[in-house]
Length: 340
Image (cartoon, rainbow, N blue to C red):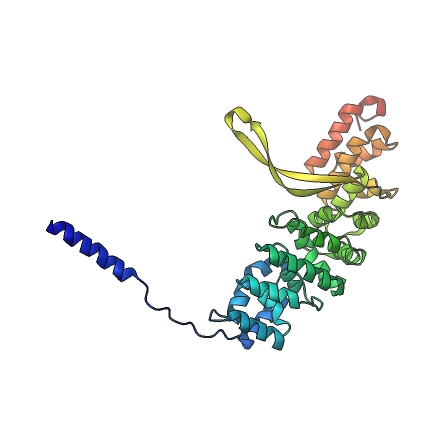
């Protein structure tokens, strides 16, 4: 009996020790103006792909935890209107919503525009709704050149972000705008780095880019842009990725592989007369492979196929030479290709 009593006293003693004492009041939250200035400067210089990672750190630095943070945030945004660009990353949904309500000026940098678009995918529905209203106020005021810097990132994220539904239509309004497209086309023409061929494929969801395809196929600096534009013109079809899915290899064994899901639409961009020859003579093997594939598809309808096969057969790329061999095997001596 004494053992039972000792055990009960031990348990009760532990429980009493676990009862929390009176709550220690946190200090009143104070907006740090110096940290805000540094955070805004970093946001303005940040790459689009870095904004999501950095934003929460910026907000936490400017407004540390303390009592009545919402009042501190409201006073800060009254004194510093640009504070809303930072506080839209705050962990408190009410503060994010209040910050979005205050955004009425142009997004002066790509980082600020991305900060706003991220809230379209916020985990709180009320914040997403406020972000829609803010986005439709802000982006028409924003210079197209600033928007163009965010377009490659937004095109990739359009089908990756999953929280939004109708909020994604805001991005489509921006991406399909003619003035924005004009700036993006300049980026595609003169860009020296990045996956701009993929950017073009995703942008071709919007017909506003179709008139520029011929120029991009012949003059774009990056070969993946030229190859994408050339393939789109010659096949008369734009294809873009919308996400990933699974295809069964052997359903009985549960073996499957990951595949890219795509959508497509017809494109009626005019084909320049010498586009195929320009593709075969391109300095990039990536473009020459596209041209050689088109030659395979059209081999029965190309008058000077003999000369084209002769060029392809001497190409440095084995993939291009393979396509020349394919044409030879299928056309053979009637076209005079067997010994060419």
